[in-house]
Amino acid sequence: MRGEVSALDVDYTLTPPPMEGIIFPESAHIQGKIVDHVEFMRLTLCCDVPFVGECARCLTPVSDRLTFDFSRTIMDEKGLRMVSDTEDFDEDEYVTVVDGMLDIDEQLAEALLLEFPSKLLCREDCPGLCPKCGKPLAEGDCGCPKKEMDPRFEILKKLLEKDENV
Ligand SMILES: [Zn+2]
Ligand SMILES: [Zn+2]
Image (cartoon, rainbow, N blue to C red; front, side):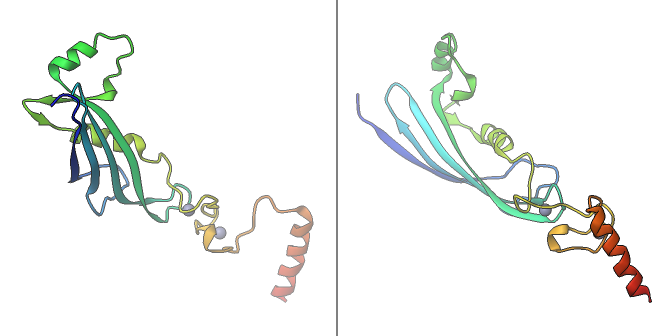
């Protein structure tokens, strides 16, 4: 068996961890493989999950999907104890096989939380809500007077308003 590389396909779904203000309409889809390099095994996965959240500026629903890569070296507990003594040991680089089982759900859920965008926006340049009436400004001008209006326009606007009232 020495030197022979075998691979195992991984394809399953994971229930995403609960997140405040976020709805996961479907389970996360995990796809990838485990490659046996004899001395160690390497797990490379891609996680894909659709989600619905809220724009941080205008509060309109945002539907998007989160996709991220997840790769770890698989070790048994004995192997992990050995590498954990080395200087550049990074616990997050490894997953352990316990009693012949590889359970990565918890680590995947953790990675999902880390990878999740800290701020959702309906679009990059979302102008947010009108501070006066609360209407999303992306839907067009709500008609409220703007704070930083050019004073010259302010005068013009007053003149126009007068006209309307006549
Ligand atoms: Zn928005
Ligand atoms: Zn307004």
